[in-house]
Length: 338
Image 1: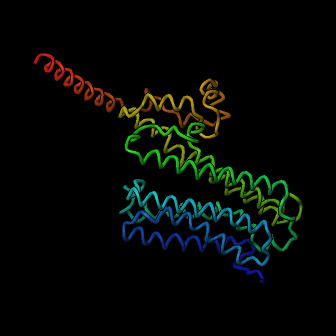
Image 2: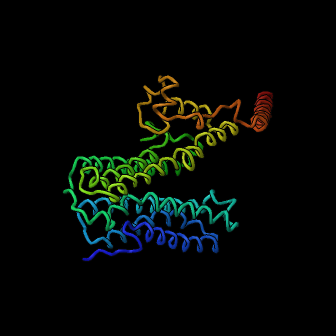
Image 3: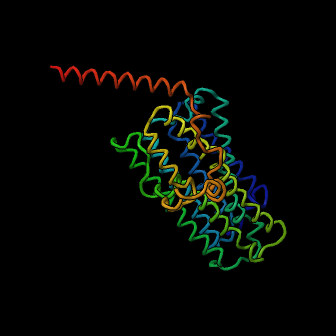
């Protein structure tokens, strides 16, 4: 099969146009029908679409292209399937409560999703492109290939298993409000994020093999190495934008102000690494400086009740609890005198 040259020889423009069209199609449905169930599904399946198209366009289907394309398709399909299942169960996505009826703020999320899909797909997009496939490729099975397969397997299992463990924990009525400290969550507070980061670096590791072993040159060499932007972008996204910053300090603040299992949550964060899996028995004894540096528990994630809590809400809750306790004591005294 002859390779297809579409707009440019790295497939950057065609994949961007397909991504924009794909996301706008689902955006039109979500906005017009106020329908939340397709948002994450559109993001995950978009990876599958881009991998299939670029692999089909490529005239050279070597094992590395097939494996790397399959990896991102498997990851995207699993992610979109799980998130679709979860939103069907929950009914709506709270992230869009302040955007769902506003055209441009809601569109802004979808534009960001376009950039996320296109950027994270870069290693596979460029690996399948004519400017790379025109060179002879190293046989699949290099050290980087093997390391990439191993890392992908570890990351995929971590993300998949932790998603299931957390969903099952939260779906049980007796666990309502409790800290999820089961399974992989014993070793890290966010095993799904750690797994996802590993997955993206493993896909890059496989894609860059032709450049790392000197089989491609010039622009193709630079493009393959530059595709690490996808893995870095996803890591930055999870660590500084939509992942840990939205869960760590805000989650702790909400628990503290409401008194919702605050003590057990505080103990859990003390003994459990924020991202990198580590034995809790050792982590709890680790000096703060090592937690802040090696284990990436940065100050922006840390909740300080004196600085970050709304003391008015805390006092209001304590007053309500005090009144309730007083009422219970009076009731018990009344029963005692009967």
